[in-house]
Image (tube, rainbow, N blue to C red; front, side, top):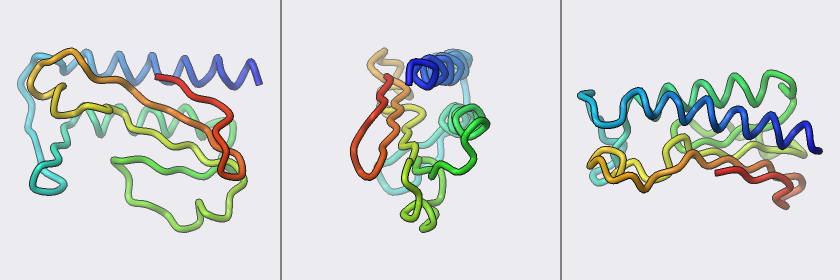
Length: 115
């Protein structure tokens, strides 16, 4: 479990580095819904997390705010739940109150959490 936690921390740091590359810069802002922004930083951090977290465990499910939900995740015992930028509005407004949020749940119970 300790190795899994360390790998999750490394993934959070890598995704965080991606967000910092964009923070305070100029980039296009899309809207998923009327009041729900998404940026290239969200999408790149999400791709980084998906690659790193599923690399050693491709059998784990995946649920992300930035990825289309896949119903097969419901059949998986373990599922990664991530938000690559939890606080996108703050990120866009350059308020330093956002995090990379990662959880691993097993049979519906959280077993790893990193922000």
